Length: 294
Image (cartoon, rainbow, N blue to C red):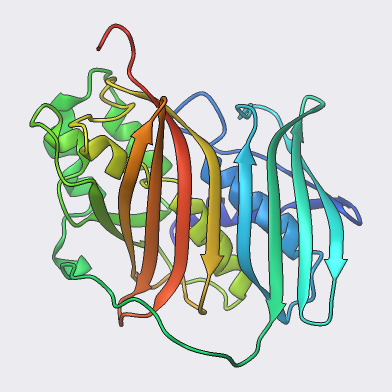
């Protein structure tokens, strides 16, 4: 396990202050606010620690309310909404400086048998044949207007091996619109414990990294790092269909059905390498074009 992955695991190991109150810290972010995937993952950790271990997370619904301050701790207040015979529901509010910055509702379920079907896994190249971030980003450093952007991106994603199946938006900026679809493979850079909640929380963390790329591709935009859009996550929903491991290759197949009103919608499915559909994701984000760009 590399040091960056251990740092991320430490980030998710929240301090319990009271029975239903937890405290977390933040880590380096690409932008001067808390990374949305971090606060979502930490909130899910807080919820999960108040639920019996035999009940796994099956869905979450979240809203990003205010930008998080990366220099201040985040307090997670858990409300035990329901403890039923099969399902457990939790509501979590993340608070900084006395104000809520994030709200999450999560549901957990005891394992049971039921009907089974899924959409087939789409075609995608073998992840081992794709360039690593350390190979891809430096080759395109000239597209980023701010010095040191490549290094900051690599540092922020050092805990995760994330590989693009097609050219990402920052590579094709200025080349015109493309199909609003993006695929990436990802896995942690090291083996993890078997705790299912940990794997679900790490997938939640990664799910906020690239989902809105499909919106950018539809308009030939490169993203915040290139400077031709201003963006932020607004809301986020995930459904966990089947068990999986975040330390094994997962295909994140993403597309955008719509963008309007300064917002873009991304939908996605996550598959294991052997073709099992394990997670569905939907996110809406703020996607504004700076006036200086037009």
